[in-house]
Length: 138
Image 1 (cartoon, helix red, strand yellow):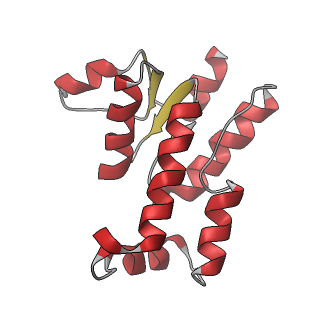
Image 2 (cartoon, one colour):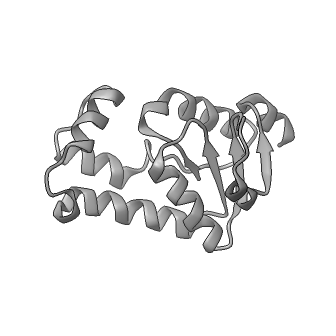
């Protein structure tokens, strides 16, 4: 499973394609049928930046059924994952997902340059500066 930010869609798609080219399976929230259905029902056919601006400004988001559905989809994917890859740059939600994955005992990989010290990044089992560095390791 890959976790990242919606605004990082191009890099997520690149990583998915390269992992699959190595004969591996991977879950991407961009491709998940239930996620796509949720977006379709909400009329979301927007550029990633436009989508995030709209999503981040949902009033009463804690009680919004579409936000809840996306949460449920993400949590199921985390429970079902064998390995979770955090692809930087990543936002708050992706970092929370990494923490949940750690608490579930999942193998954790981070891809992207982490320049400053982050003690909690020690939850990760493997570190790669670039997508290509990671792909070479497969």
